[in-house]
Image 1 (cartoon, rainbow, N blue to C red):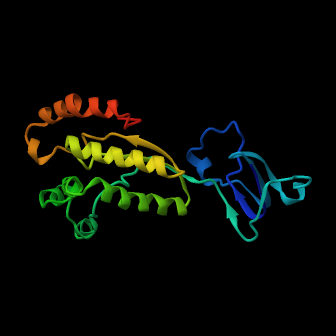
Image 2: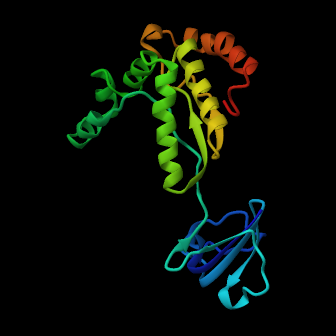
Image 3: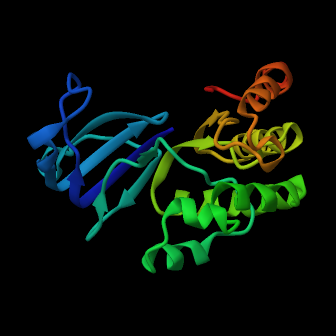
Length: 217
């Protein structure tokens, strides 16, 4: 399958193959080509350049991108997109000067998210989270890392990771799953963090390994 995009108003991030990353002052530069074309074959960029160089190219599909900008998709390397409910009130609290610790002491923060997630069934959590992923795909995200960590119990952490796995199986986006079981100390283990770490090591990790639920820990 070959795709040819023509008449691109501006093609962004034109870099040499040898550039693995940019940093510092180089991040201010955004190399581009105006009035460009882009040829993709089986999801691999094969050729690009100015439209005047676009000659004798046959493609299965041609897209006219007149007046439009083409750029690489976003790679979101840190997300908590699988969650239940929201913590909108906490934005107001922070604006009003409350610290994160004060918000947590009032029942907010991670422990609040964990309680909501624990009380949400897997199918509902999946449907809510899948819609969020579909939305960010429309906004240009092409690769996504998703963390657990709002479960904080064996069942809830596994529920989150299973939802991440289902999303990966039912969307085209590239997804990596991270187990973040020690995101916070649950109320049940307040004052005994060692016991909770033991639970993670002895109970959670073997099950996560058995079901192949995490790429990273």
